Structure formats: structure tokens, C-alpha cells
Length: 405
Image (cartoon, rainbow, N blue to C red; front, top):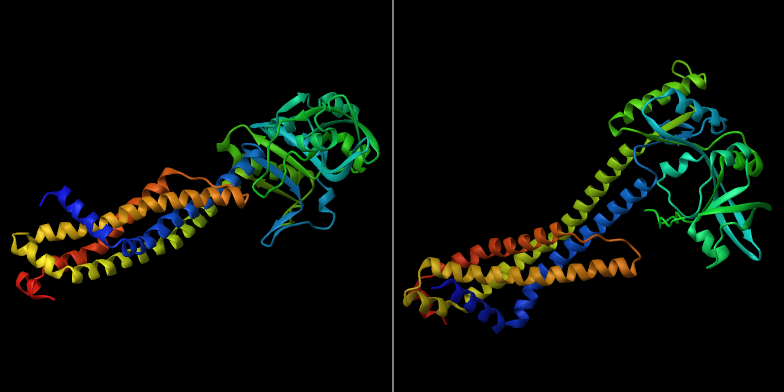
């Protein structure tokens, strides 16, 4: 029997029992669709986490006040005020393999322009902050060393702040009020969008660090020090040197606990990527269970089909059909169910993924790998669970089959 004829007979048998065929495929359709949708969600989470961490800068180390313990980051008494601007200068001047260093402070304030107001985060930074965070000024300019040294009341604002306070007009050159003090807008940042945790990265006002410390917040310490290392392979070395330097500057000796914490964002990204990958695999594994259930459904239906077509099998064998011919015919039927179910499942999974992205306000990533893997898995499921019914059909005694009513 020709292969093409076997396919034609298989399709005829399936279309003769449309409802039963659809119900048989349903497990495969749901399984393939669920795998694609779940993997796209997991990969969307991973991409958002990577984008969020990458937006902080490449090869980044962040020094924060407070000690790191097994219970997480905690601040010893007074440790939150011990990180100074001078510490960042010492790091910049004494440690090699560093491109940029920017100490920062931040707080929330109401920003006012005329009769418009908006609550936003005000960050005090140095000029290096622009390179570290890969910021781009769309209009105007960024703060300069002169602004820093002179404690100028100037501000660079994000697009969210610009839209809410100035609408469609150009904010550059105009004044805003921060904590009832006037600040001249010298630049507007290009949009960076939302972070992985849903934070609006464009809802920010950036001012010189010295202005924020002395004129706005009235503090002498910094809340973090951002450091960009020149070589990713030297991250651990630089981190260790920073820890030694700060222990010396803060007069921490022996086993005394640090009053600061140095975080390596490269290690953090690797850890988060591994975590999200495991979550994605877990989701895909759970979804794949329905594929196995669908395969069992295929076997059940094919067993019913063998029973129903016992006389037909007997006639075929009496006319010369071999063991191989019968095996191939029934295997093709089960594989066809897997192929059609897999194809519909791919469509269902892609539509489900796009629906999650649109209505759930959640980023999803559809790639070829899970689509191809789930499709070939569904075909394999059809083939595997079709072997037993096909073998049972092929082993029927033609005489007994012809007597079957």
C-alpha cells in the first residue's frame, strides 16, 4: 500500500468521525497551546528582569549603607549616614579598572510648574551618572561639573514629569519648583519606559548631588554609590578592593561587621536569569502534562477504532495487506491527529500569548524553539501512543476478524 494512500485512508477515517477526532485532538491542542503560552510568559519575565537590571548600567557595582547578613540587608545603628561623597572620590582615585563613579541621593517631592503639580522622585547625582545608567538627553543638556561645584539649582527631568507639568511645550529653559525652591530645567531625558517591577523610569527629576544634599535635603551623606567597572572579568577583584578600602576608611577592623554592602549586578542578573529559567521550565513541564493526557486520549480512541474496524482489517488482510501495511495505516492515523492537533495548538498558544500581553499588560516573548519543540513532541506523542493500537490491529487473525460482528 502506498504511503499517500495510507494518509488518504487515515484522513477519511478521521473525517468520518469529526466530533470524536476533535475531542481526541483537544488534549494535544490544549497541551501545545499551554506550553507555548507558559514559556512565552516565562521568557517575558526573564527579558523584563534582564532589561531592568541592564538599564541600571553594565558591569555595575552598587555600594549601599547597611550591613549584609543572612537575613538580608539591614542597617546597623547609624550606618545609613556613614557613606560619604568622599568615599566615592576615594574609590574613583585609588582603585583601578573603574570607568565611572557616581554617588546618589534621592527623595520624593512635589514638583510645581505654574498651576500644575506632580509628585516625583528627585535624584541628586554627579555627571558620571549619565554614562553609568546609559541615559540620553533628548532636549537640552545634562548636569555638569560646574553645576556640581557651584551647587546650581538646575534640573534634568524625565518625559513623564515633562508631560505632566508642561504638556506639549518645551520645558528647557523654564523653571519648576522643588520643595518651594526654583530650579531651571536644562534638559529632558529620552524615555526608558517601565522597569521589570512596573516602575516608571521616566518619572524622575535629576539635580546636582551637592545641590540635593545641601540645598534640598540638608544631609551630608549619600544613599548609594554607583560604580561602572571597565572589564567584566575584573568585577570580583574590584568589588574586593572596594570592600577593603571602605573598611579602612570607616575604621572597621577584625571581625567587626561592615556598615556598607557592595552588590554585584552582573551576579544578580545571572542569578535572576537562572531563577526565571527554572520558573519557565516548571511552567512548561506542568503544561506538558496535558500533552501526555492527550496522548492517552489518542490511544483510547485508536483502540476503539481498531474494535470498530475489525471486519475491515480482516478484509484488508485477506486481500493481501501485510503486518507492516496495517501498522503503518493506524500509526499514520494517530500521527495525523498529533500533527493537526499540534498545528491548531500552536495557533491557540500564540493567540493566548498575545492576549496575555494585550489584556494582562504583561510582556510575553514568542520564540521558535518552544513552538517547534511542542509540535514535534505532540507528533511523537501521537506516534508513541499509536503503536499499541496499531500493533493490536496488525496482529488480528484475518479469519477471526472476518467473523467479527
